Image 1 (cartoon, rainbow over the protein chains, first blue to last red):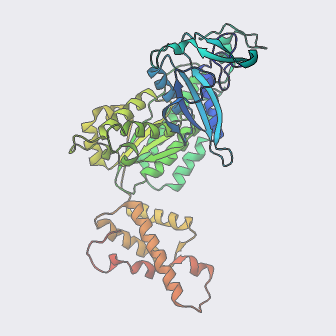
Image 2: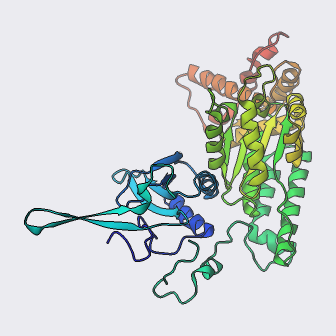
Length: 144
Length: 325
């Protein structure tokens, strides 16, 4: 299911868990670096569970040896976008994979208003459903 | 949303206590029960690196002494930490000054290893950069570029060769200043995460520090690399040959000494690097000398010996005019 009873957006790993602390994030990042993944930071204020196109914050970080670099950038991103969703994404460049291996949300707005369910009646009493975040009523940049 | 309004299945403890039982305190040196200097040394195996340093690197006594001091401080700090005596992590940023070829880069590599063994840096890799890697070409290019390098160096050692090039007073629109500012900020705020080592020639580094006093004060260790004496250079030459399975033939050692005495007086003498170049050219001459006689059966000694003639063919012995490397 796309949403959980708390109204928190669930996307990627760990999103049904309580927010990760910085130490826990550091350990996840270290795990990725041990496997040779390149981390990058992305943010958005358009909280649809299916919105996979987030904005990049800086370039993907290749050739890192230590999570401190990722955490440093994350701290900056949080300072710039304290009320946005921020996620860390690990890219695995192994031949044949060349795709995202890990992705988890590390920052959420303080107040997540949740989603409204919209129904469209179609032919023969069929019903179409869609969800829409209450936060997206406002234009980009003014949400949260 | 620090505390969620739901429980994780299977977790009895509240969410707040989760970090307490994770081994997340990876930042500082690993805590252990060591109580004596010997125990710490055994744990960190730093002695091996120090011995290697003594064995492989000729001369450089003041440098080695300083490295011993630093190692001692870090060992004692570790003992203090084990007994719960908190102290701020000492600043380990360094500046190596000295003439070309005096071993600044080599020592920096060893430094990364030593600091890693002592648990001061976490991964012990060395990122060697110059001005080009830090300073951008247009407005807004420098900051991301510098940060990228810094991020790569986190957990290890960032070695900035010829650091004085970062600051170019003759060009007021130079972006070097921006790189220096970011560097200083990270050196201050991420002291636990990386060690910055600047290297360069003495006079030019002095000018650099004069125009960037903040930089100078953020660097705890200013280490000067002395020039090598002829004896030390000879020893270096022997070590270099040994490494490549060559050796001096009969009488070559004296010729080499003569060569070095002449070469030192020439301009652009680069200490160990000049020795390396001289040996490389001697190897070329040895190869063509052996090449000339097609039917000679060459023994192992023939193939590994550098004969006096191989060195005497050098331009240094022909006349007094200055030559390059």
